[in-house]
Image (cartoon, rainbow, N blue to C red):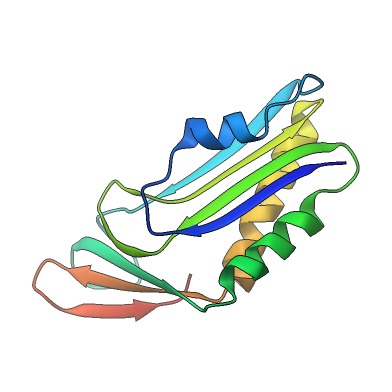
Length: 139
């Protein structure tokens, strides 16, 4: 039975907390993904100074479903969180940790989890630019 934790959170995310949440005596590998706010978007003209994330009220249930479905055979634990609210450049927007006995499965599940989150999570991102403009973009 895998341990699964999924959150939509307005508070800053902590990588170590996610790794600790998937700690298991049989885990030989913990793969992590950290998505952070960058100062540019190749699809947008202008320097990004912040992102404003918003999410549907059901977003945490969707994230929990994605994480639970990702917990296939061999996965010992999954912890994944997505921030909402205003984030400055450098702040963490997404953190995922996946524990397994061996590294290959941990890498695969972590990558699949993040791709599904990007495709299925009902969340939106507004990029705030240095000149004061703002642009809505998809996750």
